[in-house]
Length: 378
Ligand code: IPM
Ligand code: MG
Image (cartoon, rainbow, N blue to C red):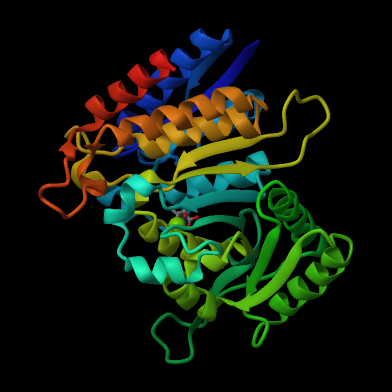
């Protein structure tokens, strides 16, 4: 089969990690008999430099025509003084909205090889794990195209007067809540069958609406164990007892915050992949999907062969799974990542603290090469 992939390397370490993910995809294609064609597009800071806009229309149009999109990262200090609507981050929001990818899946798992890089004590991990193991396996499903990120916002009054103000609005429609909850229930059914809605229903009306709708869906999904948790408590539970969670589903802003917290627990933000998916539309072969590592552009280490390419590579695996239903190929990539880690290779972000750990610190290139070698031998 032929697949057309839009490639948005972006800024900072984006280009170096996506190029490794592309190598891995091409290799996987060769091995399993698929052809992945890449169309490279500009978005973020590099697009601002080239065109004056973070998300040129041509980029969004080409992205919409492709079967799936792989993105590196956008942003950097160079563009930090830009006004809000001209910041690189607008490109991300524009792509998410423009592609209609309303459900953001962010797995946070602690691989046994990275136990040393997790800041939690072993007994803390064991205590909440159903089988007493020192690990956890959480999927955060974050609503991605609604809420306060996209709600009405503005400023009122004379800028310097004491009663001048600024506002952002958290508003969710029933349809927006239902579709992301259904995606989360689907995911829970394929995992351990537990779903926790995280909200602030003790204070926010929009959260109470989420809970009402979730209770309706829960009644129709008796096979899933549904629970509810306030976001402040969840922030605490993640570091106190992460093993209790399976699927966490939550709003755009709460998901943004909790997924960064969860990423630290899994050893490094440099390991975490994400998939953003939408609903299938008429005339499209696949539902729209956008895949990106969640680590951001890390401009301080860009171009130094220091970035961890594994999150981008694992994002490519998620693309194969969620957009193209190529489960066998996705598993092969994940197994290759595992075996690179098994052989003791570590980029600096995932290096353990023990001196005699048998680990070898490597750069972006060597890590990616090890993944390809493992794929070759699989
Ligand atoms: C993320 C990022 C983005 C977000 C920023 C860069 C706009 O933090 O993908 O989590 O808040 O969604
Ligand atoms: Mg974030």
